[in-house]
Structure formats: C-alpha cells, structure tokens
Amino acid sequence: MLKGQSNLILSPYYEIYDLIIPKDNVLRNINELIDFSFIYEELTTKYCHDNGRGAIDPIRMFKYLFLKKMFDLSDVDVVERSKYDMSFKFFLGMAPEEGVINPSSLTKFRKIRLQDINLLDLLINKTVEIAIEKEIIKSTTIIVDSTHTSARYNQKSLREQLLDYTRKLRKSVYEVDENMKAQFPSKVNNGILEDEIEYSQKLIDVIEKNEVLVHYPKVKEKLNLLKEAVNDDLEYLALSHDTDAKTGHKTADTSFFGYKTHLALSEERLITAATVTTGEKHDGKELKQLVEKSKAAGIDVVEIIGDAAYSEKENLEYAKKENLQLISKLSKTVTHGNRINKNKFEFNKDAGMYVCQAGHMSIRKGSSRPNKHLEDGNGYVESYYFDVEKCKRCPFREGCYKEGAKTKTYSVSIKSHTHQDHINFQESDYFKERAKERYKIEAKNSELKHRHGFETASSSGLFGMEMQAAITIFAVNIKRILRLMN
Image (spheres, rainbow, N blue to C red):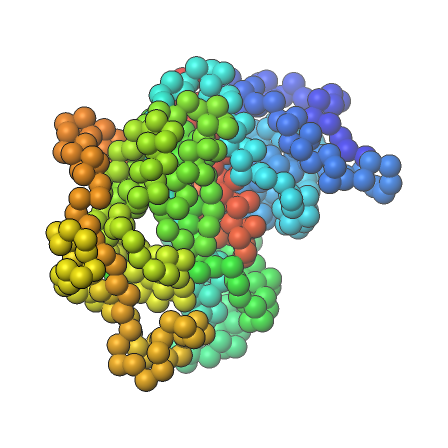
C-alpha cells in the first residue's frame, strides 16, 4: 500500500516547524511552489497495491533524491542529515520525531522504481510548466550546447581512486586537527592495489576511533566516500566496467571517457530540454530533438543560438523548413557538401578533427584542390590522417582499413558556395549581437558541474546517467525559478 503526499501528519511536535523554519527557507518555498503528487501518479504502477508491506512513500523517496542533488550529498549523508535538519524533515513530509530510511533504499528506488519512466522529460516539462504558469519564461529563443560527464568507473585505476579518496580525507582531518598526522598509518607507494586497500582500511579505523573527529561534517562526508569505495565499489570495479561510456574529445589533445548531456536553455536560464548520449556523439545531431522537446514542454521556439557544431547542412535545412532563425556560425568542415561513410566518421568541432566509429581521432590534416572532384572548381578537399598502428588493431578495420596500407585517410569536399545565404546572415550586426547570448549556457554547464556533482557520473550505464541528469536539472531549474520569482 502506498502513502499519499496529502496524508495529515499527526504529531504533537509538528508546530515546531512553524517556529524554527523561516518563511523564506528555500525548502519551504519549494514545497509551496510544487505539488509533488505528479511523482505519485507516474510511479503508482511500479508498486503492488494489495500485497506485502506498506512501501515508503514514493514522493518522499523522490524528495530524498532531490535533496541529494540540491546539496551534492552522498546517499548516506543525505539520510544522516535528515535525522537532525528540521528543514529536511519538513520538506520530506516527516514528523519531527519520525525515523529515517535506510540509505540502501535510495539505490533500490533508483534502479527498480524509476525504470521505464521517462523521468528526464517528465521533470524538465514540470519545471517549464511551472515557469510558464508563473509568467517567468517569456522568450522565444533557446540556446543549445552540450556538457560532458566522466564515467564513474575506469576513468582512473582502482588504486588512483583510493589515493584520491584518502588524500581528500586526510586534508579534511588536518584542517580540524593537524596532530592526527602522528597517528595515521604510513602511506604506501608501491603501486600494489591490495596494499592501498589495506592502508585505506587502517586510515578509516584510526579516524573512527576518534569520537570527536568523526562528528565534523567535512570529515564525516569524506570518510563516508572512502568507506563506500572500499566496502561497496571496489569489488564491482575489479570485475566490471561501464560498457555504455565512450571516449569523447574536447580538443585535439584532451579527451574524456563518459557521456554527454545536450541542453536547450531559455534566455531566462531555465533548461527547457535535454538528451543524454555517449561521449563520442556529435552535438549537432541533437538539435532537432532539443527543439521538438522544448516545443512539447510549451516553449514557442522562434530562434536557436548555438556554436559551430550546430551549423551542419541538415540543421540549416531543418531551421528553414520550420521557420526558425539559427544563430550558429558556419564551420566549413561541418557544413561540407557530400561525403561517404557519414555514419562511421563524425567531426569534432572542438578539436577540428574527425573521429572514427572506434573513437580514434585523426592526428593531422591536409588540403588539396583536385578539380575533377568539384563541379565549379572553387572548392577543395580536406584529408584527415589516422594512426595506422591503431587501424591495424581496430575491431572495425574490415572495409575501412586496407591491409598493408601505410596511411589511412578520410577526405571531405568543401564547397564554398553551398551556404552563401547563411554566410551573408552571419556577417550581419543582428547575428553578431545575438551570438553573444551563448555565455548563458556555458555558465549553466559550469553550475551543473561545480555545484551539483555533474562532473562525474554517480552510477554506471546510460540509464544511470539519464536519472542523474533528470534530478540534477530538476533541482537546478527549481532553484532558478525561485530566484526569478524573488
């Protein structure tokens, strides 16, 4: 049986909330702003209604996840804080004296109850609906971009992860009591994972024996992270890896292993749509979906602002067909004419290079002007060279790399007259002025990463990344709505 959000809380201490939680408290304001019953309506089919023990209210479970992302806390710490933080208890719909859940229930809720729910669109659409109702969103422009998130697993070796956790824990301890250095075990530096695990456990034991030290929040949070790594994550990491994550490139020299979240942002800095892909996917391919999702959420899209990744030919044609103004500077290589193997090679606009389906980036490029390939003789051909040694071992080499070849190139024809209308448009004062609005989405990407833990995936797999994106964006949008209302 499920408990509904509207159930009356019967407690002789309930009035304490009115005494100690200010009227302008952010969690009180969120409770007043949002009717969370939509969560109950979406998840009711995920529970058995006539058998077994009563389930924890799904609205309360969702609110726990919301608090976790709102304040960038671990499962253990968000539950721990709800024991003593009265604003947390009030937000969760708990009586002041009521006990808390087991942190493991949050993992089960994410993996079982939220399966097969399009939570990403559901939560974004809900926030946009609220913003429109409050007359916050008035613009007809969306700004598009992507932000990358590193995979939780395999971006570092297991030993490197433990070194990182122990270093942060020691630093937080020294800020409280530098004399603890003398009590800590000797650090190991022999490169052996088993010895690093043993050192980590000794460090945990020493700190937990200090009853005063473990009650400092900054120490306790770092301690919990290390304990989770030793007790829960390491066995999984040793046996598995994130099979969904892929290598993406930010520049010709830098790469990341993980995912991309493609975003559409209104000029009021509210996220109106999002899609989650693996790291190697091209930004421009997501434009149409971001526009359609924004429209479905209730946004009257008239103008799109994006970087050069969105200026490919298909997007220009789509914008023209839908009577949309596309403020995206042309990239000659993205907006080329015809090319073969379009699905096997994607252009990375940050690095200015092509990436093959195996995730390998070209190492250099050259250009030539063979008139036989160009009808008007005004264009030229760009050739992108790949590392042959990688091609020889590539699982996709059949039909792509010719055995024994000393070079592997991918060539594209650049036609200078193909997008003349857009070339003229991007030279206008209007284009140049509107393009300046892109900074807003770059600032939003930074907020997601640095304030809400979006730099690293909190679980493995594309589904886990979508769940993280859904709840993080929901929290960020709600904060923005409250700020604009005030």
